[in-house]
Amino acid sequence: MKIKTELTFPSELKDEPIICNLCKKFDIILTIVEASFSTATGWSILILEGGEEELERAFKYLENSGVKIEETQKIA
Image 1: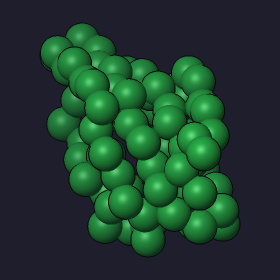
Image 2: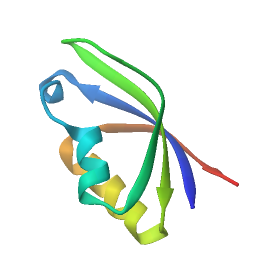
Image 3: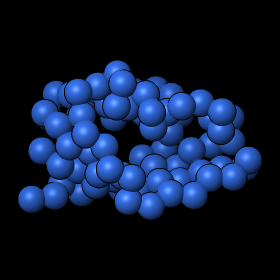
């Protein structure tokens, strides 16, 4: 399953390796389509590919970390 998602990162997460942890903690393939980060905020558009349960776990991790999930779209 492939999901395209847009994420927003609050300033308090600027020093956290959130995107890196997605690949290390979960059995998914991650593609960064576009991203921009500053000291105040950050955003990224990612494509996550993996099993449904693993993707659900990854999204829970993002939510629990404080990342705002703006939009998700399944990709054929």
